Image (cartoon, rainbow, N blue to C red; front, top):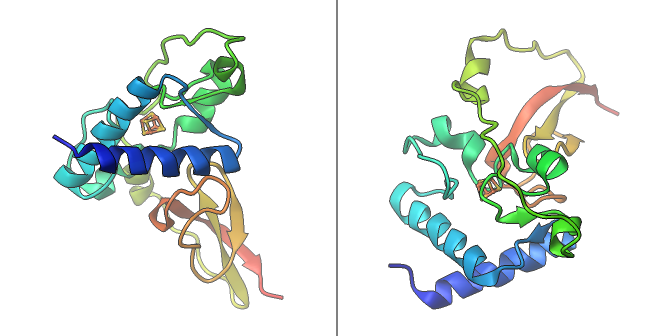
Length: 169
Ligand code: SF4
């Protein structure tokens, strides 16, 4: 059982972060808080915010794509107006102009981060800096290491992937 104050604190923080970044939490507050309770339960169980609507493996590398906000949030918002759990909804659903609909599972059988392990890695070029891509929202930046938090969607550092290399200035 998760403490109510902890849920409320996370709800407030997520709400503010979402609104500041162009996202919206589901306006059904009781429902939204129940999802947050699921996230916190998973945090206590696994040490990370595994999606409350999916069965986690309990291995962070395996579950990386379903750590909230998951890799599938933005495409699901674009196509269905809500993420798989409906924690995040579109402006249209927020304003009642569109009905929420069931969102099919977009996650492939083999998580993308595992599928990539077999692919050849990109060789670093002399005088280049790595380009990092936020797997959640697609934000790109060229720097030695990924930022601690995505400035757009607030996903954490471990959600960035090496995208290629850019020329150092
Ligand atoms: S953003 Fe993804 S991980 Fe988070 S609640 Fe929605 S579907 Fe689950």
